[in-house]
Image (cartoon, rainbow over all chains, first blue to last red; front, top):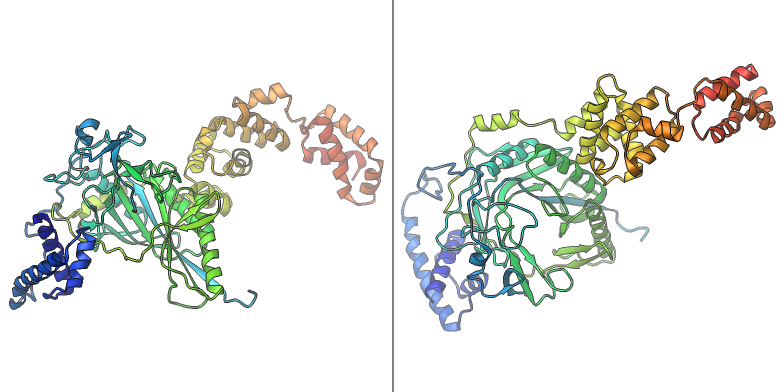
Length: 116
Length: 480
């Protein structure tokens, strides 16, 4: 449940940012839940709708500030070009890589068929 | 159908090229095609929590070189974004890509505008995807993450292409350009160059674009041309029948020529791009950009111009040589072997006309048995009239078949041109005797009749006689 809340808050911030609308509808929640592959009960969806509206309402306090001269900012640290040289570094062995696989088949991560 | 509306196809291409770096885009895992599955991974490219991506400097330089070769402007500061969607080949649940500020934009290559070229990471590879070999109908997918995180440049063109043939020719030029840059293997079979096409049609004269479909992952030039033409035909038939084109993603099956819908777009993709918080902007200095620009090699378009202007090769042959990466490299090798003062135009004609006729236009001549030096020598023998055209073609047959040295083949097969010899004069006498009608016709002014005489001589000499020489002797003998 905790992850669901975190995921929905993150997505909710995005929805809010995009639509500039603090009040979020049940349909918005259903839509972002579907994108996040979360299955919500009706109660959970209602709860999320209230919680996300509250979060976005809080973010909306930003509107009280005069931000006309402020550039949209994705990060505050003024760093650029943090690059690495094109040199091979040791990675994981195949067994290590597959250790966390839900299921292993033919030396690969076996998952339910893509697209279904 | 005869009074049906005329439609204009409008095609834009999206090309993914895998960069030929040693390591992945955001981690130090080695890149190797065909390695044992899941042996080239680390916590970063497997998307484990708490890992941090760091961009590969060489990949950034390669992306800049690609953009410059395509006439793009390079963004002084570009950003990475997360493109969010769920698919088993994407372990993080998002792909690191570029969104509103790609590193390269607004270019042009041979009349096709480049909308943008941006950096991103490749997805992993789904293996064992079911009986059909495609994504549908499989019960389970097995994923190999070796490819996941390979640096890509995605090149997006404007919709400036209007036929399958044009798409094919342009893509060949693009491939030759990238190959010349050395930033990618551009091997379509191995997937280091992949092409999707957005295709729509509109009534001729109409400005606004029709509904487009997307043709995915065609892995050869031939399929691209055929797939696009098939989709244009399908859309035309739909509109002519009063139906509508649906926006969808299609898969072209080259064996049947049919197009099938891959996945419906009922739920339009909503990728929720947002700035990648783990990566800082890429801000190449103007010095770096200038340095990369100065190091660009001669590119196929310039090469075609040089062949045409400096070597006197026809425009068509020049393009064929320059736009076909392997052919062009071979041609250059033959030129180098031939040295200064060689008849470059004749070399071009022999490579494009005769060698290609024998090995096929899609073959790599470097993999044939005809060494560039042998090709150069053969053409020079033709130039010196040491061997006739017909004789040289026989020599080339032998070279293609088993390689070797042209001089030795000429010697062994007795293919040396006869030239102005007594032997040839004797054969011409016999030819005249055997063709009294032709002799009469020539004497009464019909020189076309000489064909029969030349034919006789060629047959007798197995093509070793020079046609011009025979004509000269005939004229002398008949006093014409």
